[in-house]
Length: 280
Image (cartoon, rainbow, N blue to C red; front, side):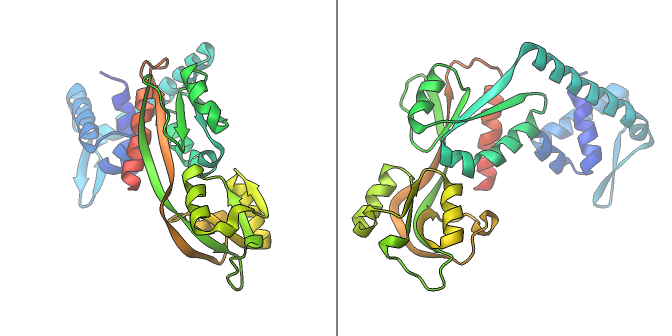
């Protein structure tokens, strides 16, 4: 019997729902059902019964639960100890903007799926991301631009349109002295300067979204931002979209080497891809 089936059993007990357990374990619901069925066949008993809209433990399931919890906890501790001894950890690299927008949630997802692994996150200049992935200083790269190498496997995870926004202004003032410039890449800058030539100069220029938002929150102004993010979660008030860009987008790509060094990489890629598929 695969001891991971006991971990699945414990998760179903916690959630009382096969679908929620599958989501928490990053499995399909059919895989969770199959694991529980195999457990029941192994122990020659029924572990769950459906009661109206919920799942209840049978007396046999109640007796199994403390042993399953103990074995699951022991397995996790053993994995963590072996990882520490081997010095094994996964290294993710991202540019400044992607790190601020996407990485907190992505790291939470990865930690949730692989709690026995240590995760190291690197914030890198865009020009270093490709090189560090190529020399295996990082295992997975998150980039706002496509990376060109026959040795990389990659995919586009997310693309959000950009727009010109007025932030924290009692009355909309789009004068150039109000402009805060955030580096969204060459395409965004080209489209901005084609349509708003007065924004060639800015009162503040940065590649950090948090620094730009802090300035906008304190002083007000206009800036290019992704359309669709909940800016109230970033502490912004009175946010108004003045204009949508036609072509420029805020994009997130994920890349890794075709010949992976760490066996966990394909599984992490699958979890991240699934997260963005559900988000869409």
